[in-house]
Figure 1 (cartoon, each protein chain N blue to C red):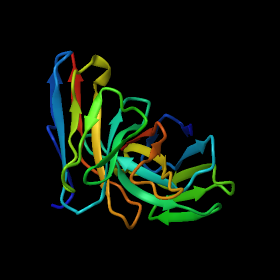
Figure 2: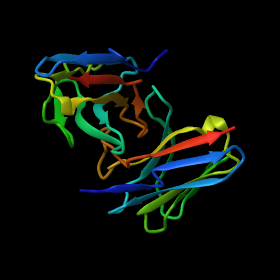
Figure 3: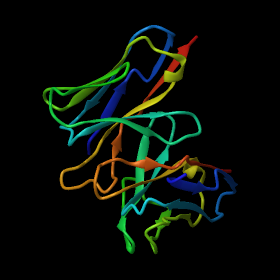
Length: 114
Length: 112
């Protein structure tokens, strides 16, 4: 059974600071997705990374996929209060097709203070 | 707005009661799934469906039943609720193309 570990579990920072969240897997990812979830809402997909070493940018968010495809990081530059939320990584289990079956990490709760 | 609709948003049950969480999507997605979210444990897959009439178990299926009589609807049934089923439940769907899940807003269930 694949295990996804996210760190840190909690992160509390001031607006304008930079931060990095990590996701490590006990086995190679099929492909990896990062989600952001706000209170009272469902997760929303931020990005999908597929290739080892891949880097994707989404405005102030930078996503890296490890060369061995067993780890990933999410870096936020100059955090804003609107970045507050739960960040989840997930393996798509897409060996054949995932049918919507994802394996999630336990999440990182980010709080950005004004 | 198009998307995944879950009802009810909140529910309190007593141990042993039964109930159904409703999930409907209007995007003509083939794949639908149910997850539960507990503090410190991320989301865990309960059941999923690859099309009308086809369902299968996920990681934590015990205590839950599902059926998929139409493409649009995927209800989750708790036959005899237990306190361990206190959780937030999310329904999700995706089409056969891009691997993008669309989640509902969740249903918070408390079992006393």
